[in-house]
Length: 344
Image (cartoon, rainbow, N blue to C red; front, side):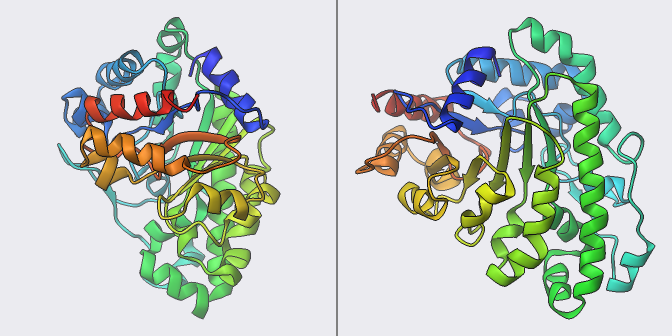
């Protein structure tokens, strides 16, 4: 993000009404390689192709905030790899991490990995360090430390169904697992900030939070999310959960979150009410069925509908209800941007 975009983000989070409403998208490996005309494997393995894909997106859509901006990542494999998960990579598909915990007793074999040396984290951080000067020469800055959330990581290590069942049958073991993951995540975020002093934000992504009812959220998610968001003194605390967001939304501000990317299944008005209008909302048209597969006209109509009738459009950044999906065209993005410009 450049300095102007960063200030706009801070202003929106502070509650200032910006007209026209700003536009922002989470972009990473599901969208960027295909859009840039390269394979997923090339995107992950070539610093030059990774940099050029991100640079091209920024230059093609200069008025859009791309979050977190020059995201160095290996899909869902980053954190599981540190725990020893086998990661499978394919030329034109996203990578996948195999589970390593076959039974809850296996949790006792885990220890906290070292992000400086374990798994893919060192490669991710080194890519940012190697490309930092080129990024800054463009007028952009690395702003975010990024990690997957504790429930998300746990679901990869155990399997989603197995993790959710264990939270009911073996709660103590699950807490042990979540504490180990949280300790690692905090170390990983701190390492990123120590290495890159321009970082002033956290992005944490955890869709498994959306599978929890309120008692489970308060028991297994809330304390660990809060510990992670409290771990860095930064101005932007950004949370992504594009599964169900109704349960977690009333707690976001207390946890420390001030920016939330949520599911298109919830309206802006609903989310404003559930968060007490204390959290900036990033959303909220359907990512796949409209932004990815719709016509430009349908995209524009969906953007207009997402804020239709709203009396208060403060703390809103127009986006889709999730990360940018594969296959979104320039025509659809331009239709989105033009619809946003009409919100003056």
